[in-house]
Length: 122
Image (cartoon, rainbow, N blue to C red; front, side, top):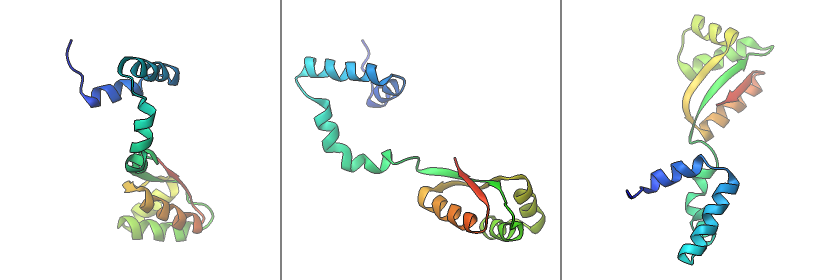
């Protein structure tokens, strides 16, 4: 039998249901005499940031709202687009910033919402 890497094991766990994962944990307790949940609790502080959410998100303009001029100005400031392109983005919606950090995305979302726009983080 080929040895599985840690990444392969994690990838296979992602495809399992919670009940199946519980069965794996119970089998590990039985086979090795070790409670994997105790190890997971000890490792949680180091990995807590990874569990909070995706590290990079797209900031998507869903609707410019009533104050479209303010939204167009924001789009231009953030993206560096020209007036015509920023207006098209405000009219039609779309990605304002790709792969932004979660902090940056939340900051941009707050700015757009203050201007009356509707933003989605994907």
